[in-house]
Length: 140
Image (tube, rainbow, N blue to C red):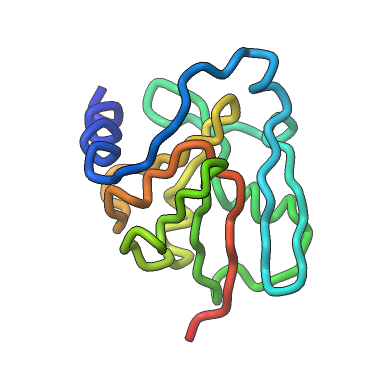
């Protein structure tokens, strides 16, 4: 319940528009692209191991990154999230997150909605609905 309320308030802080008329068939086999410079990989959420998140189950972000097999040192990177509707956390004023936050982030496999554990250093625009791409770049 606490996570749901936090998610509600966080989402109300940004202006992302997300369709709610997605059929169950469209939700099967959601794929997220992990993009790092010229390299990219598509990762299917349906085949990744879930972890408990409150009363629900979700895919830890680190599992998505590792499944991309891009061979990067994830600890030395920063991450931005772009939704299927083009919404970008960074374009809406949120700095890319570091590895400490990645360890506390999750994607719901049926929706690719991005959620965070309590206490993660994230803001409203980091709660991205329908993540399509995780942009990875080196720390500056």
